[in-house]
Image (cartoon, rainbow, N blue to C red; front, top):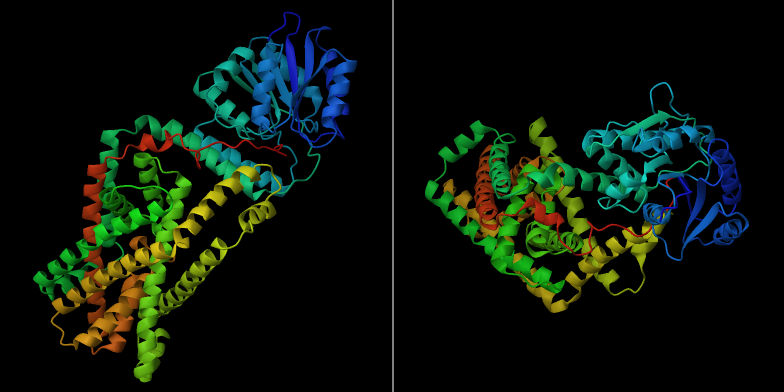
Length: 613
């Protein structure tokens, strides 16, 4: 909508600016008139769904002065969305915007405008962080700003010092070329504009400005952490991963993941101890244990299929088995079970299941796992307390580290504390899920709104509401809960059976009933202990808990029990890595497919926005 007479359009993005907008408009007109010919400029108030008197003031100013226009939106477009719409409606070929609080001294306005109007640059931006010209910012605003700009330079390859300064100008052709590719419509919009402009080879001028903070602002959890991090990572993926993601690189990454997972098993376990332990074990029984453990994996896939079915997604159990194999292989490499995120990616890439649902289904699965092993461990402990109280006393002494070396004592104490805490949390989580599923109160939105007053809250709250709703549905149906819970018990019984076969491989003479009870207790506590962040795969923590329990309840030395635990864990990890490698080859998940889906999920962009500062 260009006008031959209008060369420069200044857009003032306004959200609830009734107290300042009139002064800002009049000051802007005065400054523009100092260096531009009459009739060659306009000021557009891009009023974005305001809830105060800003629309009325903007309309009055436009009626009084033909150099002023009012761009109105009944709904929030987002700062980037409002700027996009206003720039497209602008009459000038040089498009300018700055924050309405006039934090940037307008004596720099001529340099900003003329840098682009002259044709020398495609974009121009003020900077508060050019060496020697840094603005005096409060620490709680300066540190996040520096961190943000450092991340943009490091991850996105920008050469600029300050991406957030609300003082920028665009050549119309440059704006139109960039706007089609810029996905964000929130506060990250201008940063993405600058980054994409540099990647296209456009000429960008960054010059120092005098900047004074008008109102102190707080670090906003939703906007600055969730928003900033997700948008930087989205662009990093698009620029640096997606172009190289194909069948060949996917296979290479899968193979490397499997190799690293296998190698890490021997980083956190004494290789000499492993060799000695294997040398004392019957290989046939060890292999039998591995074969039994393989049987649990189709059940894991079946259980995950049933969980997703409760969330409205019906998929093939064999595909789900492969997805579980891949994510568990990732857990052997990435600490704190963060490899679970790989499964959310796999089901998104191959079955277009939204990330929120993927993570919710994983949460439900973890709750079932933790509840099952907590019940198994608690059941054995209750039986011991009823029929052998002296044994419980011995366990308490072992948990305190008595009779063990310093290193063994610390490992056992850590395992006991972690296992106890995780067990309590598992029971509490189930109670909370069941209770919240029967409640009509929207606690998610209350918490998110408490954490932030940014309008980005609407988007974030909707994401978390979907996640929590999925978790609740996964546990709301009593029959489904019983069916999935029963499958979980069988899965963990097979896990215990594997450990018992390894135990028998060492030729120890122990009564079957005692061995069975101890096996359930030791495996359950060991798996509870390795939930908290630690070495990849929980290697080390599991062994300490397992060995402490076995050596206390059975006539077996701590060292021998540790050998059994090492072999047991290695057998399970080898099966996991082998299954993960085969699944990655079979499913051949393309990294690009995860970001090409059309579902509204964590990859979608928000509609809501608030001013940056």
